[in-house]
Length: 234
Image (cartoon, rainbow, N blue to C red; front, side, top):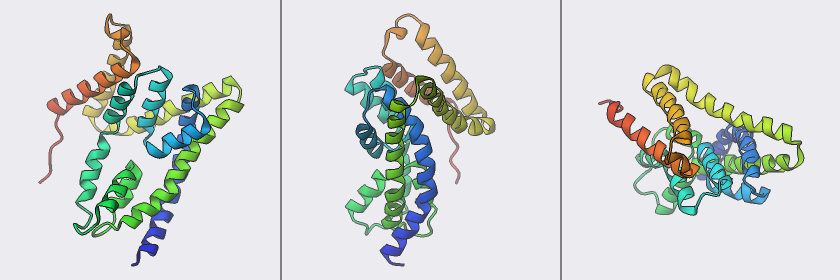
C-alpha cells in the first residue's frame, strides 16, 4: 500500500477521534477564556499541547498567574506518560525510518492516536499517524477556540455551567478504571483528600496552586508505584 492510501486510511480513522476532541476541547476553551486567552492563543496552545489534562493544568496555572517554571513542570509531569507511549511506539517503527518521521510521529502522539497507531499490523507507516493527526489536531484546536468565543458571548451563568462539564469529563476518565482496580481507586481517594488538605494546612496552603499540583502528583504517583508496582508479564 502506498503512502497516499495509508495517509487516507489514517485520516478516516482520525475523523471520530477529531469529533470527540472537538467536544472536549470546547469545554477546555471555557477554562482558557477564564485564563484570559484569545481564540487564536487558544488554538495555538491546543495545537502544541494536545492533552486534556495537560491543557487544563496549563490554563488553570495561567489563571493563577503561575511562573513559567511552574507551568513547564506541571505540563511535564502531567504529560510524562507520552514519553512511555513514544518508547512503546518506537518498537513498532522500522529502523530504516528517518529521524524526521520518528520526530513527527512522537509529536503527534495522543492517547487515541497512539491506540490506533500501535494497533496496526507489522511496522507502522508514519503516514498513517500523519493522516489521523491532520484531521484530529485541527478539530482539537478549533474546539478550544470555539469554546473561548462562546465564553465571550454566552451569559456568565451558562459559561459557569459549561465549566462544570470539564469536571464531568475527568470523572468519566477516572471512575471506570477505579471500579476495576483498587489501587487506582485508592490513589484517586488519596489525591482528593490530600488536595483538600494542602489547601488548608499551614505553610503548604501558601504555595501556589501549580507547586501544590506538582508536589502531589510526583509524591502520590511515586508512593503508589513503590507500594503497588505493575507486574510485568513475561
